[in-house]
Image (cartoon, rainbow, N blue to C red; front, side):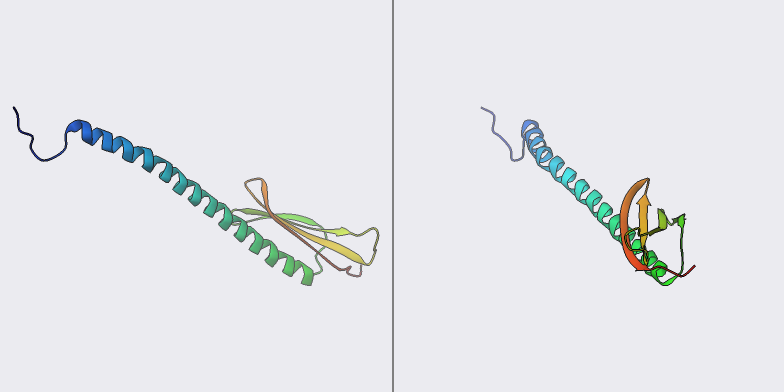
Length: 115
């Protein structure tokens, strides 16, 4: 009869690696999903900050019209709209897009500038 030495057989190692892979692959997928979600949240935060900053500037300026500009990786559209129901007010809107999709949009009202 053959006496067994210490250590693992090849079959035991293969089974252990298979079990490890079954646990590790879902964990890696979860990590990738978390990383992608973090990137989306950071993008939305940056877009929101840019929109808020631009809106603050527009509320102080006498800007009127509809202009789209590229800033960093974002497309920023600023526009004013006359309010039909209240002629003394105008709506100021800032829309920030990333790769063609709206990432943030903010609007505010101000007293209409004299012509």
